[in-house]
Structure formats: structure tokens, C-alpha cells
Amino acid sequence: MPHANAIFQNCFYVANMLNGILYGVELVLYAVSTSIMLNNKDERNTRSYRLFLLLSTGLLLMITVYVAVQALFGEEMWIIHADYPGGSAAYQADHAAVWYETLGSVASVALNLISDGLLLYRCYVVWTDRRVLIFPLSLYLITFGEYLKPLVSDVIPHSNFFTGASQHVALSYATVVISLNFTLSSLICGRLLYHAHGVEHLLGRDVAQKYTGAVALIVEAALPYTLFGIAYVITLGLHSPTTILFMSLYVMFTCISPQLIIIRVVLGRSFSLENNSTSQLSSNVHFTTSISTSTPEEGVPDSGLGSVVSVEKKQRYRWSRSSGASGSSTVGVV
Image (cartoon, rainbow, N blue to C red; front, side, top):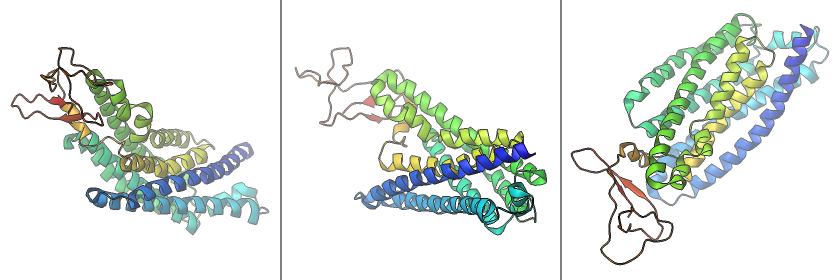
């Protein structure tokens, strides 16, 4: 339909513009995270930073391929072959399986593998329970087979990702992948909110906000990545001409959301395995008491029982597990 094609072409154009803007955001994020990691002086972080640097570089390379491919196809369709018989709709239908579009599909699949792998790791960090990962890990393994479907479909001559049998293949692939995204995001969000309740009750809202505030939830759970993925699957299933727009946003945040997580990790603001000890917090809270006549330092909560809480100069809270047989935990403010 001419009207549907007009909407598709406009969405494709807007998507390419947004790709350029978001690619610039990715370049800035990559530069910031790389600078922090390369200037790291702590040898304990060297190994993990090397891995994060490799992941960041891989994400940047894959998104560069995707953005370049989309821009090139738009140029071929709208400018170089502007007089193609049948117009832009016919050109798109006849050349959707061109070799560089297949390369773009490979790049987007690689992005999914890297991003979902990182989310699986972050889910483990938040839960520290391998049993929780059984279902999402099963989905992740299933996606390996699903990842091959769009790649095989793309190499079939005259196949079109947005119509016919190729669309059903794309919908099957996207549904499994987005289900994995949604599952991981829900698990991470739920766990962070659980921690927020316990930490806020014991140590105050300011301490809880660092790891469970709105920004932390959005970044740690990769919510933009998941939400745009859901929008993409819905529009694809409805055969909407706006699918191309949401697909582009989804692919861009497949890169940007993990990059934001990496930045929070290297800045020391992400939820870590050490913080996860609060999952054992109970009502049995013990404070270090002082027999001196000193007064509580400013900004440090009193136990309410006449005890004085001792603090370091930096007034940092350290949570540690009790070694008692009862399994209760001790919150030490030392």
C-alpha cells in the first residue's frame, strides 16, 4: 500500500537520524569507560577491566557496522537508485537481502549475544544464586539456535525481513530474545527493590539510593533495551510499517545499555557481590558500642539505645555476615 510504504520510508529515515545521534552517545560512553579502565592503578581490577574493555570494544565495532549498513542502504534506496522501477518500495523488496544487509544482521546478532551475556552475569551478581539463572540461561542457550534463523533467512534471494516467511522467522527470533531480556530485567529489578527495602530500613534512604535509585534501576536492569525490544516485537507482530523505527532503537540500546552498565561498574557505583551480603540482613542488628563519653559524629545514625556508633574518617558503611550458627547477619559500622 502506498500509504504504508510512505510511513515505512519516513520511519526508516527517522531511524537513521536517531542511529547517528545514539552512535555519538555510544562514542562518548566508550571514551569515558575506556579512559577510566586504561588509567586504572589498582592491580586487583586489571583482569576484570581487561574483559570489560574487550566487551566495550566489541560492542562499538558491532554497532558501527550496523549504523553504517543502515545508512548505506538508505543512500542506495533514496539517492543512488531514486528512479528505480516501482519506487523505493520495490527497491527495498528486491534488495533487502543484499550482502551488506546480511552483514548488518550478523552485527546485530553479535550485539545480542554480548549484551545478554553481560545481563546474565549481572543477574548472577545481584542474586548470587545459580538456581535463579536456570530459566534465563536455558533461554540464552535456546537463542543460539534462534540467532541462526534470521541469518539464514537474509541470504535467501529477494527475502524481506518485514514481509512474508522472513517476517515469521524474525518474529520467532525476536520473541525468544525479548523474553530473555524481560526475564533478566525483571529478576534484576525485583532483587534491587528487595535490597532497597532492607537497606533503607536499616541504614537510611541515602545509602539505599546509591544502588537502588531510579537511575540505578534503569541502568542495572537495562530497561531501555528491554522496553524498546518489547515495542519492536509488538509492531513486528502487528505488521506495522513503524517496525523499522523500533527495531533500530532496540539495536542501538543493545549496545548503549551494556555500555552504561560497564561505566557504573568501573566507577564503583554498580551493585556488587560485596553489597549482596545484605540479602542475609535480619532484625538482629548489632552496632559497635563505645564506653567513652564521646558523642555520635554528624550524619551517623545512633542505635537509639545510648550506644555510640564508631566510624571511619570517610564514614563508610561496611556490611559483613555474621559467622554465628544462627545464620543472622551483623551490620557493622566501623
